[in-house]
Image (tube, rainbow, N blue to C red; front, side):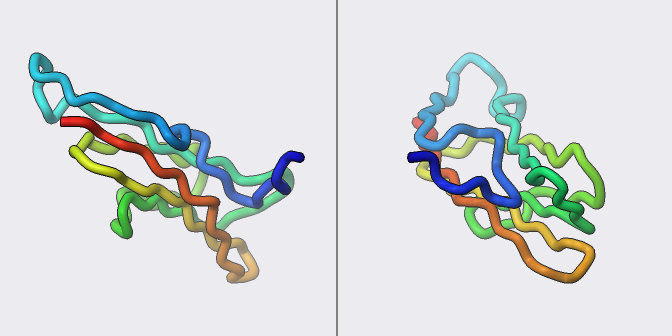
Length: 100
C-alpha cells in the first residue's frame, strides 16, 4: 500500500540515489537540485530545505528549489515548512550517497 501523502514532500533528489563526483568537471559545478512541493490545498508561509541538519535555502513562496554541491558521503535531506497558523510540517527524509 502507498504511504499516506505528506503535506510537504521532497520531489528531488530521489531516495537511495547514488551520485558520483566526476574528476573531469570542476567541483563547484557538480550540484544537484533539492526541491519540495506542498500537498494539495496546503498554504505555507515559509519552507526551508535542509541537508544534513543545515539549512540550504528558505523560501516564502514556491517553487521551493535550490542547488546543493555534491560532497562525498551519505547525506539526508528534509523540507521543513510553517503554515499560516504556525503549524510546523516536516517532509519524510530522503537519503542519498555521493561517491568520491
